[in-house]
Amino acid sequence: MQAIDRLADTSRWLRYAEEDLRTAETLLRQPDVPPRQACWCAQQSAEKTLKAVLIFLEIDFPRTHDLDALRNLAPESWQLKATHPDLAPLTRWAVDARVKCPKLRT
Image (cartoon, rainbow, N blue to C red; front, side, top):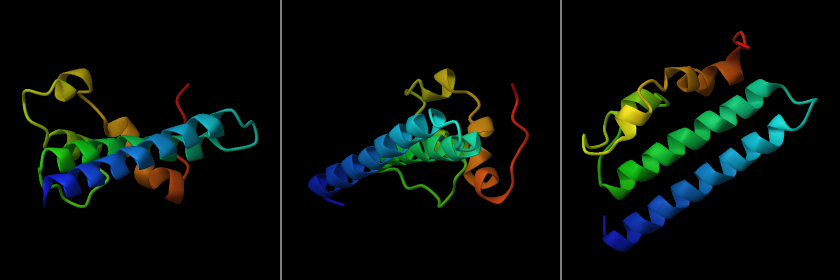
């Protein structure tokens, strides 16, 4: 992929990630909307952000919603693994929010 195309793809993924995050924030302010919908949007935002990083770095990634698997593809020099050692709680919302309603921990 040429650099210009890679930058365009990276930018598009980051734009979608930001839109998902704004949607999650908006949904959380709506008392009549189930929180799981906001959680799903937050997970999607994180997933798209990680994929944008991998696209920018020209790292191939599998088709997955597993945030830990995506994060682990980033270079060791990135602090991502240290600052976010366990993304599994967010990953579960990729499927759970759409298929079943997991117990919310308060």
